[in-house]
Amino acid sequence: MSKHPDQTRRSLMTGAPLLGAGALLLTEAEPAEAAEPVHADDPLNPTFQETEHVRTFYRLARD
Image (cartoon, rainbow, N blue to C red; front, side, top):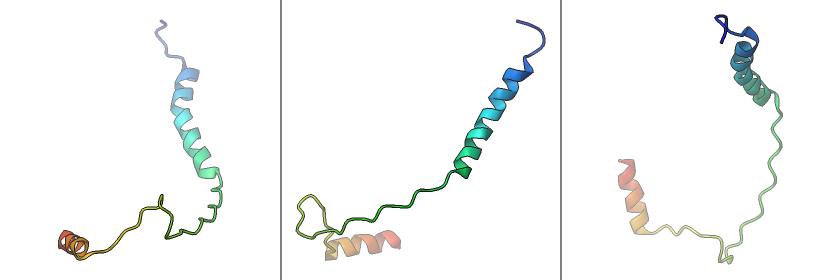
């Protein structure tokens, strides 16, 4: 090991995260795909049934 640190390696290590963050900011977001319509009779699609018990739970949780 030398007594003097290698400035090239040091600057690379400090600049890499900045370059990564800059690349994320400059990329364009892709448009979201249109969501498929939800069918009520689909057994794989869970549904939420609002009952009195559920309404009471969320009302008490908000208080």
